[in-house]
Image (cartoon, rainbow, N blue to C red):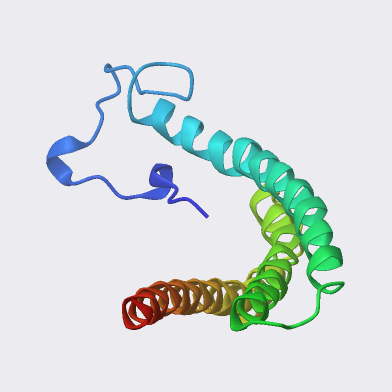
Length: 154
């Protein structure tokens, strides 16, 4: 997913001369930055996604089990159930990202990732954000109405 600068054309005034040493992937210079970037994209990022995926499956699975054994008494529980479902669907897109970033997928995998799983990921992320906003509005209204009712009683 990174930009490969080794294929870029240098301007005429920056062409390396045969006598000058050309930077490679083990020396200090532009090549080292590219190698570190490629290693980060192909090794570190997939490992982090894998750790996040396993933790998210376990914790969201536990949350699904808990929240779907609780009755819908309040809007707060309803919002939390929807957040859990959105987070679980978002978590299911991580294996596709892991395969893509590690470079294991076939050539057409990038278009599938872009078209379907990225859309699913971002749609669920924004859905979670909306439900978190609704929870905060719900909590705010509960606190305000509780104070108003207490003031009316006294």
